[in-house]
Image 1 (cartoon, helix red, strand yellow):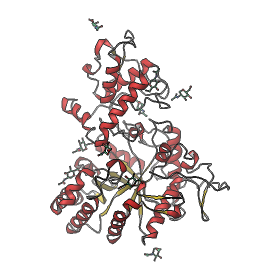
Image 2 (cartoon, helix red, strand yellow):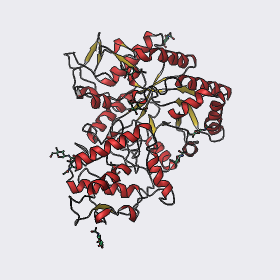
Image 3 (cartoon, rainbow, N blue to C red):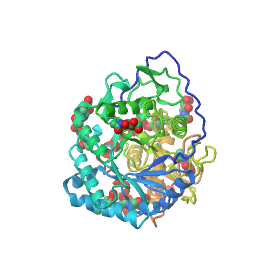
Image 4 (tube, rainbow, N blue to C red):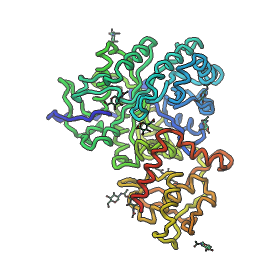
Amino acid sequence: MMKYWVCLGLMILFVGGGGLCPLKGVSGIGVNWGTQSTHPLPPSTVVGMLRDNGFGKAKLFDANSTILDALGKSGVQVMVGIPNDMLSTLAGSMQAAENWVAKNLSSHISSGGVDIRYVAVGNEPFLNAYNGSFLDTTLPALQNIQSAIIKAGLSAQVKVTVPLNADVYGSSTNLPSDGDFRSNISTLMLQIVQFLSDNGAPFTVNIYPFISLHDDPSFPFEFAFFDGSSAPLNDKGTIYTNVFDANHDMLVWALQKHGFGNMSIIIGEIGWPTDGDMNANLKNAQRFNQGFMTRYSTGQGTPLRPGQLDAYLFSLIDEDAKSIQPGNFERHWGLFSYDGQPKYALNLGTTTSTNGVLVAAKGILYMPQKWCVMSPSASLTDPQVAPSVSYACENADCTSLGYMTSCGNLTASGNISYAFNSYYQQHNQLDSTCNFPDNLSVITTQNPSTGGCNFTVMIATYYSSYSSSTASSVRGCRQHPATAFGVAGLLSYVLYTIL
Ligand SMILES: *[C@@H]1O[C@H](CO)[C@@H](O)[C@H](O)[C@H]1NC(C)=O
Ligand SMILES: *[C@@H]1O[C@H](CO)[C@@H](O)[C@H](O)[C@H]1NC(C)=O
Ligand SMILES: *[C@@H]1O[C@H](CO)[C@@H](O)[C@H](O)[C@H]1NC(C)=O
Ligand SMILES: *[C@@H]1O[C@H](CO)[C@@H](O)[C@H](O)[C@H]1NC(C)=O
Ligand SMILES: *[C@@H]1O[C@H](CO)[C@@H](O)[C@H](O)[C@H]1NC(C)=O
Ligand SMILES: *[C@@H]1O[C@H](CO)[C@@H](O)[C@H](O)[C@H]1NC(C)=O
Ligand SMILES: *[C@@H]1O[C@H](CO)[C@@H](O)[C@H](O)[C@H]1NC(C)=O
Ligand SMILES: *[C@@H]1O[C@H](CO)[C@@H](O)[C@H](O)[C@H]1NC(C)=O
Ligand SMILES: *[C@@H]1O[C@H](CO)[C@@H](O)[C@H](O)[C@H]1NC(C)=O
């Protein structure tokens, strides 16, 4: 759990404007490209978005060959990922690691012209939610992949790393200078850090001020932001004006205490969601991300690590099939919505970005302008309403319904319509998916969206049709151990709040 920050300092430190002019030679910021969507944009479209907006680096969560093919010769540097569920195989077999490198690394670099710089071995494998499942396999998998990379002759170009959640370290006093690795994981962390150091590899950490705020109601809201008015934290003379700097430098202290004070650090994920939680909205997301980008562009770094940060924003595009076990906000981290439209202005400080306006995806095709809503003649007390809504939400996405979310002010029938429409759109507007029992639902060509509440029309996929196999891939998003819980949790939540 990320520590929250009690701010003791009395002095208000005005964070300098910093200026929005990027330093010459600052390479484009990185961005996470996740694919847990029912209707992912074509990889070539996404690569176009990366280039149009001047993103210099993309971080993937696997080594999907269609995506890597699209990144070939794009000029975008790539971090590929190895999912946690592959760690035990790779830990147990050098041959498996060599196969992975041959198929997923060497071939793309040599014949595909993909500029792969890093392999991320696992993704936050030591999260408490995984109950220690990956404690024994992460380091051996890291070692085997590194050996395979050396054997393939790629070790000068490709470095290994392990993206870790920021709760592998902490501080009993909340002061960065008291930072250290969590005692019950310290031995393993030091082995991993030593191995990374021996191989000239970076430490990768995901830092989420939003989660600090979400998990701890007493967290000082303003301290989450780079331009916050929170009283600064004075750590024995070093002044911290925001939790990102403090958390980052807590890691620097932890590394320093064990003789790794010079280890390079990559911020693997940083961002703010726009929906699904009372603090997740366009205003806060823009404030946080612009604050971070301004910091990034000026090359200012943190108090203990002045200089250029290396970071990947989380994330590029919303993912409507992501696990919501951590919260309904999980599906709303994108700078762009599902259809590649920018959600808010953001100056990335890159040469291509035009004065803070993100460039939308090009050539997006939508399904027809029609929606599935609750029939005007249906009754709210119909006994089929509850099971229909829960079925729709279980098999689609109702995360924009809830207290202080974008659709949190709908009427009871609006809530029901929202659930029906989400199911209908995710199922490619098939007539049979707007056919709830007792004639509860009806198709309309009148857009039910109101204010900030979006009744979306899904994009037309580049797959030929929405077959039953695609339908099972919607369920496929529930293979994650955490997701089944998430769906059940959402279900009872929706039933509780809607009905
Ligand atoms: C690779 O990505 C493409 C495009 O997002 C997707 O259609 C495909 O299912 C993915 N393949 C695998 C094996 O995940
Ligand atoms: C290559 O990566 C893909 C996607 O991560 C994975 O499904 C596949 O098993 C990997 N190939 C090998 C040989 O491990
Ligand atoms: C370490 O301790 C924390 C609580 O301090 C606990 O939540 C976590 O599960 C423990 N991790 C391991 C690997 O035992
Ligand atoms: C972790 O343990 C909890 C409590 O025993 C359990 O509910 C949960 O399903 C487990 N999660 C995983 C990923 O094994
Ligand atoms: C750490 O980096 C600094 C500045 O580059 C250098 O002077 C110092 O020798 C390095 N220390 C170690 C232990 O590598
Ligand atoms: C609609 O659903 C939301 C979220 O589930 C809930 O907060 C709200 O109270 C519901 N509105 C009505 C009128 O039932
Ligand atoms: C919902 O209504 C409340 C109370 O009127 C208002 O403060 C809030 O801004 C509204 N939310 C949205 C998303 O319109
Ligand atoms: C649903 O509508 C059809 C056609 O209007 C009608 O024949 C049927 O009786 C209705 N069913 C219910 C349960 O109201
Ligand atoms: C709202 O819907 C429109 C059209 O369906 C879409 O272009 C836009 O990206 C959506 N916004 C969000 C935040 O999903």
